[in-house]
Picture 1 (cartoon, helix red, strand yellow):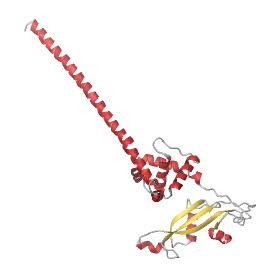
Picture 2 (cartoon, one colour):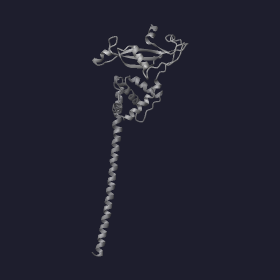
Picture 3 (cartoon, helix red, strand yellow):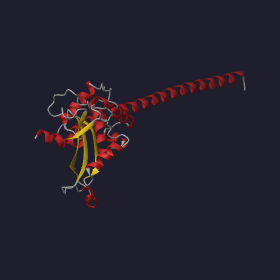
Picture 4 (cartoon, rainbow, N blue to C red):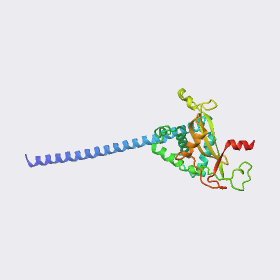
Length: 268
């Protein structure tokens, strides 16, 4: 081949390479833009689910739990009335310092806590009902649980110079305790154990309160056929059961609780 032909071939190859490089560059930019748009669509889809789908579901579920439209819904789901629930939220916020987060209000935190306690619901079930992650459910449950000392009644013993017509006879007494029957529904085969001395199907519940009628301790779960002394013995022997502090008054080794029946007899 002549030199002119060699130059023509070289120029053709050079133009081909330049065209190939331009083509690869354009293809790269197109692919990069495609990946960017794909990621943006994925992020937009996630944000759309979080902000437009999940939050309305959470608000709707919270309204159902707290009984916005029905007075019985809050009582059935959280085991307290709407008024009591709102008061509890206010006390936990003002006295306990409970704070709302960016995505979880105080009402939802308290509702999560009460729902777990009321129905012994597992984390897997609660996170589905509240449209939250398991970590969020656990975090806010323990946040409310840590505030129990704020609402826990601390009894004070009756002083020596007490002038209360009801309590002045019980120097050093911390409060009152009594058992009560609460009617329940159980399977037919277990009714014998839950039948109390009055013939009703119930559980025997022990309640302890201070002088202001604030509950200090409650033990439930015993069958109606169980005697009050057995329930009381179980409450005292439990690891986290009823604790009676030592405080000698008039030579007594411990402070005492009186029964509600004693107080009722004194009032009559």
